[in-house]
Image 1: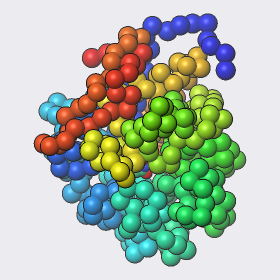
Image 2: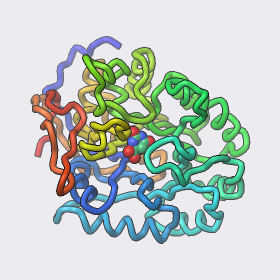
Image 3: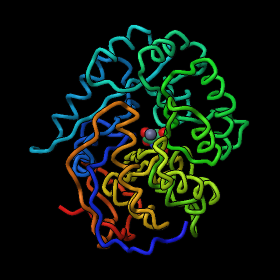
Image 4: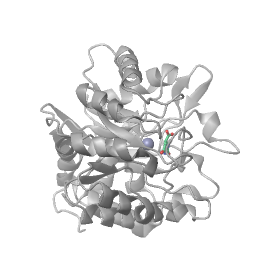
Length: 352
Ligand code: DOR
Ligand code: ZN
């Protein structure tokens, strides 16, 4: 895409929402929550705690812990999700829909990522539950990677589409489905080929980096997430989709904090912490292709429309005013958090 002739010095948009976020719990939750609440009105909160948030009762309790951890005078609405297991019963879906705070169910293939061991081995064991979700309009949020160790890690999303998503679409054509954190052209093409029941979220880190960023004069654990970064052709496909104005694609940061010592380790955890620049990083990505005028739809409108929620009416302003990302942020009593792009600068700043 050509650079737009207008070089914005600031941009005002309806307050965005984050449709995919990890907030953790306890001290970690208390450390990270304000970063999101400062920028976003609402967030879809991932349920991969230990133990996972598998019931409406657990989601209610978690939601109350999040609200209790909010800084005073902060308006932020956590939108809760349930963690799908092969034991999730259809009546749990009834209870979720009857609640006013559970908005989706998250499907982790067992073993695909952080705290996914209790996830699903065989989706055919969830047929009755998926049928109830389809009937009642509760979206399924999909971590789209096969866990088959024989499949190359860079191909796991594409293979998942063929092995799992295509059959799922055939068997449950009216099930609302979000392919989360899309990382490949195949993921983009899949979502574009589906009807209005299917959408996709895109992270800022997958819009900004390709897999070379994992190996810049050494291994870079803070750029390691799942699904792993892909080659440049895929990043270009993601950026084109995000900035296309197609309402099937919307913002989901997948901000996923892990303590520094657990990232900088022999077996480092997957996840990039982006919440401290949760909207600014997207402004940078959109600006890189002259598409800032497409940011509001992607960040503030299309997700709400998909979830059937009202659009936010208050506004935020971003200024073209470069700032340095800190090397570390406070996190736990005995460990820190290294944010995405630590020590680098971001061209866009949130106006207070
Ligand atoms: O990189 C990731 N981190 N990907 C996920 O799917 C989970 C997340 C986490 O919870 O840390
Ligand atoms: Zn995630």
